[in-house]
Length: 179
Image (cartoon, rainbow, N blue to C red; front, side, top):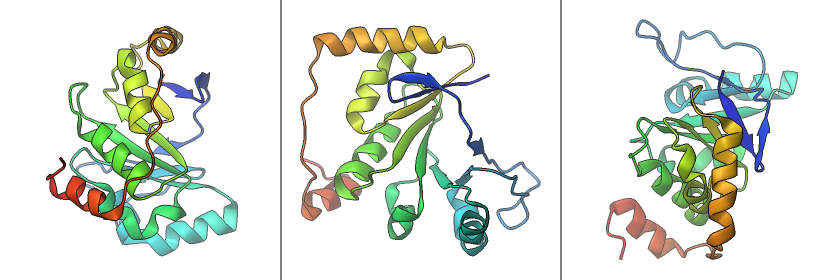
């Protein structure tokens, strides 16, 4: 069972993470009932159906970005999502942190921003500073222990507030020419 850390507490995760099996397409995958985190491909292929589900049943909608997908893939629809999740294929992959910073600072996303996959429990504070406010930890990571380590690190490292970056700086981030 995966542990969800949200608002600095272990929480119950009501969201279903939708992934595409090898023989499924974005158009053909079955959409389970309840709150869904869908991959960008499913969002693009079935946007109308997903929005109608949200209004008809009150199920919130979320999307998840793969490590190589940036926020530009969902920029026009960012306000439609209650949750945006970013996948970490391995603990040392820093692309997710970069994506989180762009979502918060450049695109102004204010909803829940979740890290999932191989999320390094000992780096929760660094992930939080990048903009994440929820974390799905692997089954082998003790949620409370990871939370305790993060709290200890936070006590020694005050967080610096950074204002939203201007559009020109965001363009530099996206093109890889950040100063």
